[in-house]
Length: 261
Length: 344
Image 1 (cartoon, each protein chain N blue to C red):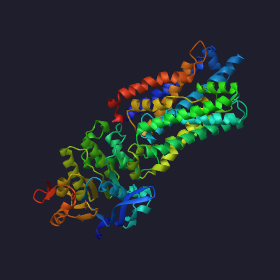
Image 2 (image 1 turned 135 degrees about the vertical axis):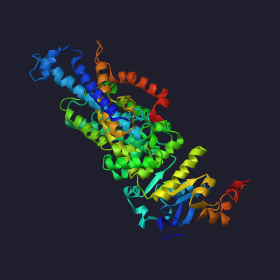
Image 3 (image 1 turned 45 degrees about the vertical axis):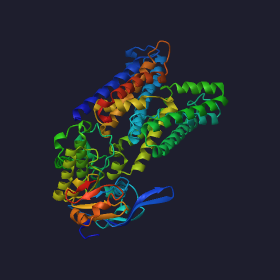
Image 4 (image 1 turned 180 degrees about the vertical axis):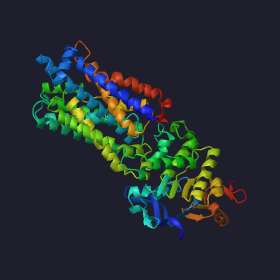
C-alpha cells in the first residue's frame, strides 16, 4: 500500500480511544498514504471512526500503536511547531472569530512562520492575499467573519490553511453544514488545490456521490472496521462500496454512483 | 478593522485617563484649590502641610492603585474569556477573587487573628498576605482547569465558579466565627473594595508585580489570537495549548491575587472591560485588544474612584459602584448578542 510518491504514510497505525486504563481500538493495522497533487476522501458511517482517525493523523490524539511519517520523518516525535508547517487543518469546530476580518483570520495561518508576537511582514501579507484569492474569498477580505455565510466562512478557513503553506491539508467534514451549492464549490476548490497547487488533500465527508466524482482516491471504512483504499473505479469494481453500509438496508448502484433502496 | 479606529480609540482612552486622574486629584473630601495642587505637583509645596500630605500620600497613591487595579482585573478578565472561550468569564464570577480572599483570610487568622494593621506594619506581613492571595487564586484556577476538562459547557463552568465562590465565602464565615470582632470588622471593610489601601512604601511591590504581569500578557498576543480558533486549531498553528493555558492562568492568578490582597475582591471590572474594549475597537485581535483593555480598565477604575469620593457623606465602597456600571453593560451585551460581531 505504501508507495514511493507518498508524502504522508502511516505504518501499522491503530486508532481508538482510551477509557481510563482501557484501550478501545476502532481501526487497526492501517498502512495509508497520501500523495502530493491528489484529493483523497475518507468515507464511512457515523461512528465508524472517521474523526478519530483524522484526529490521530493531525496528532490531536495519540494513536494507540504505529507511526506516522511525513517525508520520512516521524510526525509523532516532532515539535508542535514543526508539525504546524507540514499539516494544515480545517475542522467544523465553532470559532470565536466573528470580530476578525477575513484578512485577520487568514493571517492567523501565518503563525507557524512569524515571530514571537506574530507580526506579519510584507511577504506574509502577500501570501495572505494570494491564499484568499486561491480560496475565492478575496472579495470579502475586509468583511467580518460574522457577516459571512457558512460557505464563505469555510472558504475563509480553507484560505487560512493555505496561508499556512503546508504540503498537506486535512479537513474534517468540511462540507457538513453547507448547502448543496457551497458543498460543490468547496469540493471543486479542494480538487483545484490538489491538482493545481500540488497539495496532498485529505477530507472526511458524508457526501458520497460528490466524493466519488471528485476525489482521486477513496479511503472507505467498512462496517467490519477495515479501511479499503483505491480509486473510485477500483473500489466500485471490487464491490467495496456495498461494504460501507452492510448493516443498513441500502445498496450501491454502480450506474448512478450512489446508494438506493 | 481599520488602523484609524484603533488609533482614535487609544488616544481617546488615554485622554480620558488623564482627565479622570486630574479629577481624582482635585475632588475629594477635603477641598484643595487647583493652584495648591499645581504647587504641590511642581514640588514647591502649597504651604499647607495637610494638603501636601493628602495629595502626595493619599490621592496620588490612590489614583495609581486604582488605575493599576483596573488594568490588572480587566486583563485578567480578557485572558479568562479567551482561555475558557467564554464571554461571561471574569475573575470575580469564576471565583478567582474569592479564592484570593479566602487565602487572605487564612493568612490573617494564622498571623494572629486580626486584620488590623493589615498592610501597615512589616513588609513580611503583607508579603504573607500576598502569598495567601496567590495560593487562594491558584487553587481556584486549578479547580477550574480540572473541571473545564470534564464539563464542556461554558455555562456550567460559570456555575462551578459561582459555587466555588459560595464555598470560599462559607469557609471565610467559619473563620470569622473564630476571629476577633476587630478582625471580622476589618475583613468586612476589606470586602467593600478600596483603592486607598496601598501606601507609598508598598507601591513599588504592588505596581511592580502588576506591570510585570501586564507585560507578560502583552507578550502572549500570538497564542491568544490562535486560541480564538479553539484548542484544535491553535495546536495546528504550532501552539503548545496546555503550556499556553497554564501561563495565561498564572498571569491571571497573579494579577487578581495582587489586586484582591491590596484592594479587596472587586467585582465586574474584569468581566465588563474586555467587552468595552472589543466593542469600541470592533475586533477580537489581541494585539490591539490588550492595550485598549489596559487603558479602558484604568479608566473605569478611576471613574469608580471618582464616584466613591463624590458623596458628601463619606467614601462610598468601590463594590457598591462597580455593579451600577457593570450590570447595565452586561445586560446590553446579553440583549444585543446577535448584533455584536464577536458572538457570531
